[in-house]
Structure formats: structure tokens, C-alpha cells
Image 1 (tube, each protein chain N blue to C red):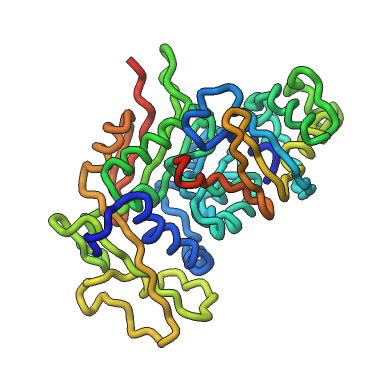
Image 2 (cartoon, rainbow over the protein chains, first blue to last red; image 1 turned 180 degrees about the vertical axis):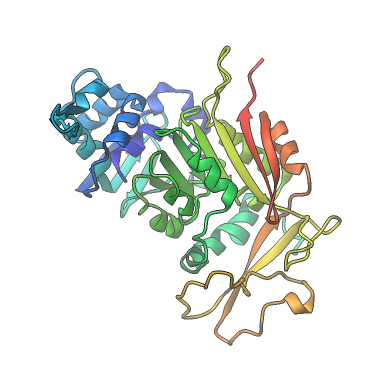
Length: 136
Length: 259
């Protein structure tokens, strides 16, 4: 499961959703894998303003990945355009974000809610949010 | 159908969830052509929109538009394993009444052929509400709230091979015949002979199957005209557009402005 997904995930238990503690979910005992995918400049540009940057910084820290700047990079910092042939080259910032959000995936491990402590398993890259009967 | 069993979560676990888990691979091989109204809805989204496909199955709608980002979810792990291969999207295993997303985080959502699998009126309304809760709510003068497209199977389909129509029992069991060893995709235009119906007229029943075939029955609630709109209203949504397409009722809805 690509890390970008975590930007749109929280605890499946309704009463947790109103608590700020339930976002982001905390990865524990995870095994990461890199699954390479084509760089898509437009996609990255569109997704950047939708990121909960603070949550992403927390995640990067918890996963032991290189730390992110304090505030979200500006969309304009994603590419440098060449005046000669009108082409755009992704900057290092863009390449790093692509690697972090779209290529860095949780293969195995747990996602833990900071509010209720419930653990959701990730197996073979699939996160499972089904709740046991007594929590529904 | 077996009316002695109480409907609800346990009933659906047996008559919907476990069936899809078992037929996942074969079911998936028959689900690859997007329905036109769903395709249009997804293609007309502004680039960079972010949404949910609740009950995404094998993820066939994740393939329609690569300029948006969709988080698909389904109760079946086997279907999610297929769905998660659709880049650039994502897919997780979840129940549609306990979705793992923050309230209001999506621009759009789709719920295609899902809500008709819930077995009580209350659970169907709750399912609509759960999808509406995912959408960006209307705020102040901004009417630009998120939109959901919902599709459900229609009771009124007298021209279909199943022949149901107004006045028929709305809660039905529909068989899926899994032929042992079958792996091939059906050819275009070749109507499925497996997905027939219990108690249907003789000419519409499934052809005599080899011994080793296995029949699974899935529960469906067939929606009658205007019932979907009613459920949406009950769930706190506003219907923006609705209609009938090929044996299904559909509607596009938004969360209602809180007053």
C-alpha cells in the first residue's frame, strides 16, 4: 500500500473519527518495499495541495525515512522548465515526493489508531479495516 | 428465499460476503466493461480530484481515469488483491458501514452495485449515509460540495432475461454458478448463462451443469422506482440527477447543507 493512501485513511470506528488522535494512523512493525512507478508530473502537482503535510512529516519520522521540511513545498518547486525546448524537468523535491508518496509501500505490518489503539493489519500490501463484531 | 433467517450483518456475511470471496477470481473475469454513465461521471471529473470507490470489487472503475486519485474499498480481500494493481490508485479491505476515511475528505465517490446487497431498509440508508459522509460538505455560499454516483439493481426489468417487474418480491437470491476449472473471459455479447435466478421461468434457468460445478446464491434487494431517491433523502442527501439505465436505477447526490 503506497504511503499516499494514508493521507486519506483513519480509524474505521466511528467514535474515533472526531478525535484528532485518529489521524494519521501510526505504522508499527512495518516492512516497506519500493514499487517503482512512472513519474507523473501533473498527478503530483494536483495531489500536493491535498496533503496533510504535518501528518506526512509524522509518518516519515515514524517510518525512519529522511525528514521532510517543516512546510509543504510550493507546486512551483516541482519542476524547472527549460526555455529552449519548453520541456519540464522534475526537481529533486519532486523526485523525492514521488518516491515517498507513490513508490514507498507498506508490505507487511500494522496501522494503529492513536485514539482507541486498535491495530489494523497490512498483509501482502493489503490493509484490512474490517472490525471484529464487538467494535461495529 | 429463506425468510426464517433474520436479516442484517450476519445474514450478509453468509449470503453476500463469503460468496464474493469464493467467486472473486471468476467474478472478476466477467467484470471488465465499465457502464457508460459511470464512465462519463468519472471522465468528467476535474483533473486531480480525489475520491472513493466504495465496494470497488476488482477495481474495474479504477482503470477509467488516471488523472484522478481513487481509494477503492471492498469487503473481499481476494477482490482487493486484484483491484490494488490499478495505478495510480489505491485499494483497501473495508466494510461499507465502517469506512476508514476521515469525514468530508473526498471530492467524489461512487457506489456501484453495492447498496442492494444490504438486507434491511435501515442498513441501506446507513450505507448511503456512510458514502455521503465521505464527501466534502457544502459550506457557506459554496455549493460546490462533493458528489456521489450510486447504482442499484432495479426491480423493473421485465425485458431482462430475469424478467422481474413491478409487484415481484424485492428481496431475492441470485445464483452464481462457478464452473470448475473455468478461467476464460466470456466473449463480448455472450450473455452470462450462470448468473440466472432461482425460480425463474424454465427457459431462463441455468443450463444443466456438469457435476463438479458449484452454485452460490447471493442476496439482493431489488430497488423499485424512486426508492433510491427516497433512501438518499432519508440519509441526508440531495439528489442532483437520477435515472434508469439497463436494469439499474442510478442517482447523483450531494450531502445536504446543514441547517
